[in-house]
Amino acid sequence: MKEIIKIGWETLKRPSAYFSLGFLVIGGFIAGIIFWGGFNTALEVSNTEQFCISCHEMENNVYEELKTTIHFSNRSGVRATCPDCHVPHKWTDKIARKMQASKEVWGKIFGTINTRDKFLAHRKRLAQNEWVRLKANDSLECRNCHNFDYMDFTAQSPRASKQHSTSLASGDKTCIDCHKGIAHQLPNMQGVEGWE
Image (cartoon, rainbow, N blue to C red; front, side, top):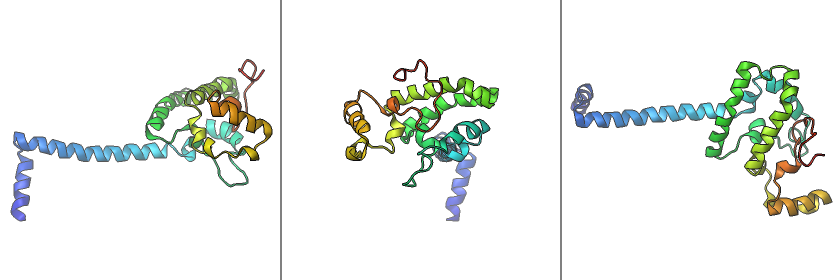
């Protein structure tokens, strides 16, 4: 065993062309595992409500609004957190969303919405960006918790039952078309399609 270790050390110390490739492959594999572990850890840390509200812009504005909604406190005890509604669960979709959200870092750096007044001034544009994103992905984040196949239309109001069984079932509408403001206060809705 001692002889094998000595040969191995001599090989690593002065690798030939053949062994240097093996060394690079093994070293690259180990470095890849370390990178992946660090990347995945950072991804999961940034995918928590605590991380989201660590910025006072989020904590003092949208998080305070969320606290008053059924998504925060309800009879079933199921609570949606920021990532539940704003970050898809599937890995590839999650990465794409994180890349889109990196623009929000610029907003933080340059103080775009660092006061309540600035936030309110940008509120409609920010909300419309989210509505467009949710419309484009067929309200994917909503569907992570709300599954059409398990809806009990008899337990819904007549209006909701009609809309869900027709417009949602046919694909003409998606969740965000009717449920804007479900977790946050609505901006001035003047000029927003369907809200006149």
